[in-house]
Length: 317
Image 1 (tube, rainbow, N blue to C red):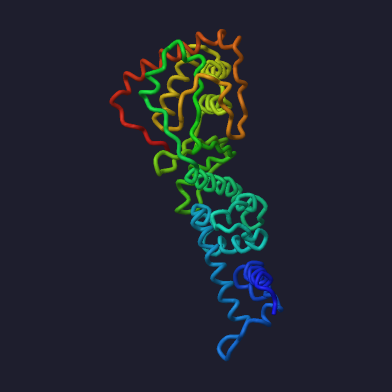
Image 2: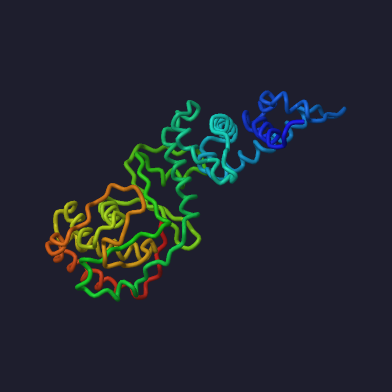
C-alpha cells in the first residue's frame, strides 16, 4: 500500500497534467492499480470524472477572471487556449484565485491568439482590476481635509495614493476594447494608453490619463512634495501658472475619485509602494524655489473648492 501523501500527489498529477479530454492519457499507472473498477466503470473512467470536474472548475474560474478575453475569442477558441495554458502552467496554489496569474504573459506567446495583438494587454487590464478589487482599504482624503491645509503648508505637503490604485501602460486603447468586448471583436488601431485603475467603495473604475495627470501621479506615487509635483508639471507645460492650475484641478479630481489616502507634511516619511517612473523628490533648497508655483496652486485649489461645495462625487470611467 502506498503512503497517503504519495497517493494524493499521484492523484493531483494525474488529473492536472493534461486538462480536458486528454486527461486520461496522463493517469499514473500505479494510481490506476489501486483504484477499484466495476462493470460500469473502469479505474480510468472513475479518475476521468475527477479530471473533467477539475478542468471545468479551472475553465470556469478563468472565464470569470477574463470575461472580455473570453468574449473576444469565442467559446471554442477560449477553451482551446485555456487547455494549452493549464498544460503549460498547472495550478499550484491552494486558491484558484491565482490560477490566471500567468495568463496574460501566456497569451503574448500563444500562436492561436496571434491575430489579436492587443489581447495580452486586455488580459493584463482584467487581472489588474481583480488585484484592485482585492487591495486593502484605506480612509480616503476628503474635501474638508484639503480645506484644512494652510496655504503656507502646501509646498511641503505629501499626497499619498490609496493601496487600491494601479497604472497600466499599453500601446493599445484597451479601455475601449474592454468596454466593447462583449460584442464582436473591436476594430481598433494602436494608441499609446495610460490607464488609472482604482477602487471606490466596492466598485472598480478605470480612466485614461493625459500626459499631465500621468506626470503628476508619478510624482505623487514617488513620494514627491506638492512643490515638486508642481515643478514636474511645469517641465511638461512650460508655464508655472498653467502648472499651478493643472495641479489644482488634478488634486480635486483625485479627491473626488477617492484615490488619495491622507496628507502628510513630511516627504521623508513616504515610501513609494509601486514601480513607477519616479520624479525625484525635491530637496529643501528646491522647495523654496518651487514654493511660488505651489502657493499659486494652493490658491487655485481653494477657489475651486468653493465651486465644488455642492457638487456630487464624480465616478470614474
